[in-house]
Image (cartoon, rainbow, N blue to C red; front, side, top):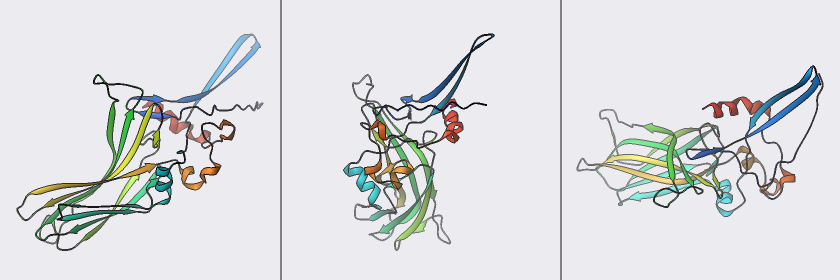
Length: 256
C-alpha cells in the first residue's frame, strides 16, 4: 500500500453548508487515480464533507455567548411567565435545560399545561415569491410539555408561583438543525418559546406564549476566542473542524 498525501486551500469566501426547505449547499472531496497497464483505468472516490463557519463577531453573537438566557413578561397583569437558562447560545447535539416560572398576579386561575419548544426560522434571500417577497419557513425542531395537576384535579391552582425544569434535546447539525447564519443567500435564526395554558376565574382558557432568541452555533464557537477563529477573508487560517469519521453521518443527510 502506498500513501499519497495532498492538501489544498479552501477558498475564504466559500459558503458554508446549508440544508433548508428552500435548497441545499453541499460539498464533496473527489479523489481520482489513473493508472496505465492493460489499458487506461480510472478509479474515483468521493467523500461528502460539511463546511462550517463560526458566527462573525458582532454585538448579538457576543451577547449570546456571554449572557445567560433570561426572559420575562406578564399577560394583562394576571400571569407572569419567566425563562431562565445558562446561556443564550448552545451547540447542536446538546441537552438544553430551562427553568420555567409561572407566577400568578391575580387569584382564581388554574394552570393546565406548560410547554417549551425550539423553533427554526428560515428566510431565503436569493429567491422571490409571486408576491415579491422572500419565502420564509418556520419549523418546530423539538419540544417538551408538562400537564401539571394537583391531587384532585386535572389542573394546578395558581395560588403561588410554580417552577418547572424543562429539557430539550437539540438535534445534530444538518440532520435536525441548521446553525444560525445571515448571508447573502439565506438567513437562519432560532427562538425558544415557552407556552402556558391558563384558565381564568370565568373558566375561559388562554394560551400564553413567551419567546426569546437563542443561537445555535458550532461547539468550537463556545470553546475558542473569536480572535483565533478564521474569517471569510482569511482562507489561510482555515483549519479542520471535522475529520473523516463524520463521513457516515454526512452521507445519511444526503440520502434523506
